[in-house]
Length: 261
Image 1 (cartoon, rainbow, N blue to C red):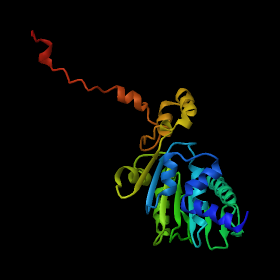
Image 2 (image 1 turned 180 degrees about the vertical axis):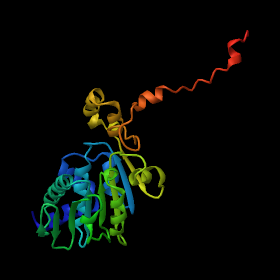
Image 3 (image 1 turned 30 degrees about the vertical axis):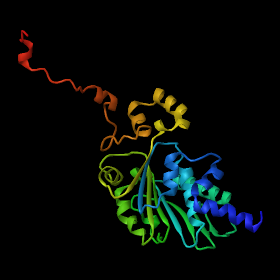
Image 4 (image 1 turned 90 degrees about the vertical axis):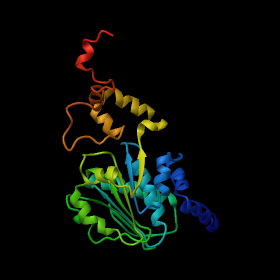
């Protein structure tokens, strides 16, 4: 590919990350993916069903971000295995971009580039210590992956990582009520909120139908309908059972039983 052709192709992808998504994934974005990739909010939260494409979209976002110089994408995941799997998605997207920007460091969780940018995927642990020393500013992004399953203590330690010009993005399925992620979703009107519900997406129809047949109702409600349930543990009754126990019919008063008219 000539320098001019490379410049023109990457220009489109750097301006519009959905163009990079189409080339990496081989399919167009869902509306929620387009919203996530194009967001410029200082703090955005994506509430998403499982297996809906969160990791792949995050990988494309990370690659598109670090194509510009001096940008860090720091991704915090609940566990080491999640961090490593997500990092592979980031590498796949970066390789697909095929930019003439060399790697200066590559490990199982860190990619540093000669333009001064880096993608870092680390496990959050219980206290966020593994993320200390990194900073996110000037177009960089601090990503909390499966944020509802990250302990609140991690947020106390890591939110200061974001500096002037940096952004925060939380992507998660629902978890327990009362945690930082839940409070953010239901109480905070300052953040951008993006919903990615599998029951609304045609390409997920077969999986949704299968899981509806075989999943416990509570699990289906959380993973597909995006309901926040309980403050810990598993509710005894399914949400639909509870809802069906209530009626809009007015309460019958004792005097009505003896009414003659």
